[in-house]
Length: 217
Image (cartoon, rainbow, N blue to C red; front, top):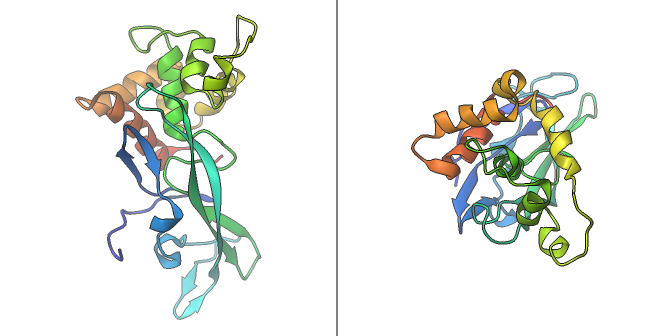
């Protein structure tokens, strides 16, 4: 596998790897496909900014691997949402003792939902023709973590999916088009960049732009 990994981009403690599209959903690399500690090592410490390596001296050491769950897309909005396990590789700076993590691309620290799953939620709820114009309740049934369970429970309506509001506020730091035009402006931007790849391309464009320009989270 050496030399086959795509170029990695560091956003402070967040660095994101490749997402493969398959089985109708975005699949994150599992532990079986974990890149080596050298392949993912950040170029410098996010705490003291000291280079990871100076000559033969290594200052940013591998500090173990963890697994965590992340919500990935159902089959382009069809079928139940799934929660996948993916790797999180940790590093330790021996100068300042700061730890940092390297994550699969599209997975964000402190977020259960993947970037593509968040964008898909806005595709479902933004008004037509930019999105599907679904209610919060219908969008949660299709995209929410417990949507399949909630569809069978007597939850009172109207339902407000509060995560959408939180994501909308934070998203203004993820993409400049969101900051200037809100979710509609961002979806137009993603769609233009994705042509003619459809919804799959739109989601991939959102992830690509976030890797390049996304704010620190």
